[in-house]
Image 1 (tube, rainbow, N blue to C red):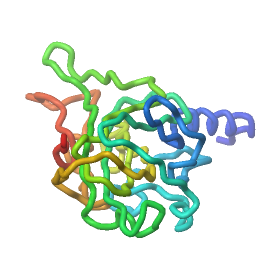
Image 2: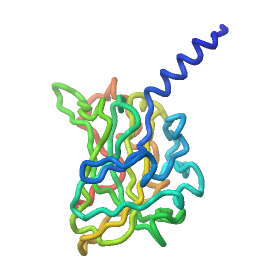
Image 3: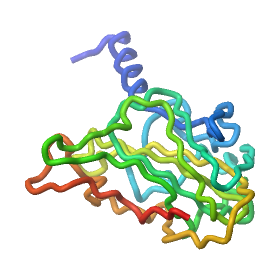
Length: 235
């Protein structure tokens, strides 16, 4: 069957409308301009997700090796609220998380965050009860925020915001990963020992019950959502 150009373009627009990027870092309620503090991502036009958890794109989905050096570094006080604003309504049901990685030699270096240095500082998982099933109260929002733990040591970091969209996660590589990394300099921090640490790629195998899951047909005996990745460090 042949599709008209109008039909094709309409379908393409609808597909892009359902996807999103996280171009704006939020610090204490104020969103910065697009890509000022967030490394520009490969999907900055297409808005398409990462689906292969073993690809290098799963880390920060950077456009290229110059993304880091072209991005500014925001000063953030430990204990304050930061987050990401999306360029579209995030209508997919899913799981949100945020990670930090010490940035060596600096936040604007392409070598920052390449090792087993990432630790989770926040998550927003779907709720579940036997009577209601899974409840995704994070649907249809355009931003998410979280707190930098007060005892985070001072220094430069990458902060990685992520949503794992689960509407098509019933088959391998069906989960959609929306990712953005901002560059920050933490001040006023403490002497905490963040952990456990992980790497990207490496944090996920793709077969975790929180990633490979049919949210519309849960298995018998299901008792609640299991978050992928390491435990949250509360600081």
